[in-house]
Image 1 (cartoon, helix red, strand yellow):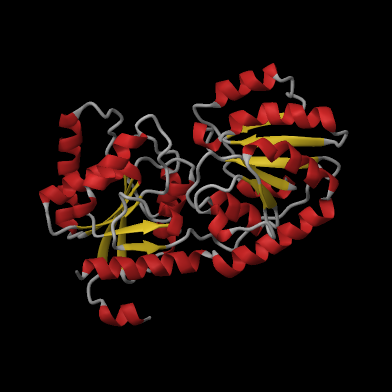
Image 2 (cartoon, helix red, strand yellow):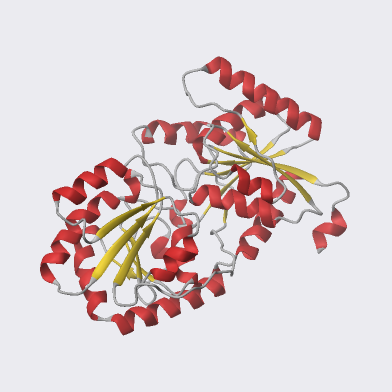
Length: 363
């Protein structure tokens, strides 16, 4: 490889993220860490908070994440002291390149830049801005533009007023590896949802949608929701309110997503906002198409030939349609799989990040 001939000493890169949970941004950090060229790059992983469900997963690939343990945003002394410890660690290891993921990591990176202005910051915000503090976060990202070197976005639509003029479009990627086993529910049409139970994923809209669908069709179907999060109790209450406990099953956190997709006929993504969803790539690799809201980068990369784009008001209509058109649904799934393999394998994503880290390291 050309970079191997150019690089004499390994380039240190620290990946900083809010926490090591099971989500899309966290999966990107894991994939970059696992697949980057170890002959050229020395990678370190930092979790800002104590949310480290995937800690052991990183250890298995030879990375022991450094946990800052900043779980309260209102303790400036702890923020500064822990960041100073990280600064000293980076100084000792001669790490210049920071890749910050999500806005908490950007705030920590800004402090690290103040401690050593020679550091270079790559920032991916992952389009994860659906919170009570959305406007404040956007303003923070806008005012911190000067301290960043390059922003990574998933598509042209992710370019916002707070994005640097120097940005790179790098869509997420996925490994072409799946675990297949027999589908246990061949007689039940199975819709699946796979994500953290957060408001932006909008799974709370499903009980009313399923109640409407249940009243209109006689098909034997179920909806499996795999994930955990703050919306769990509200979703349970809505399931009971709409009397759809016979149709919707909450599975909790499922680490073996292959098992979920092997049962699936169609993925449901009623999201209010998305960046570049790993879930859609995972489902597609299994030959499973999706009913998905046209938000974020989705319409740029996925059209009606391979998925079913639908606003939330027409979700029940699309679900009824796929129940009545199973052959078409299966064909779309196979077309989506070809699209994923042709355009979204992990090697492309990692190669582009490697080139970016090399570029900013030598600025």
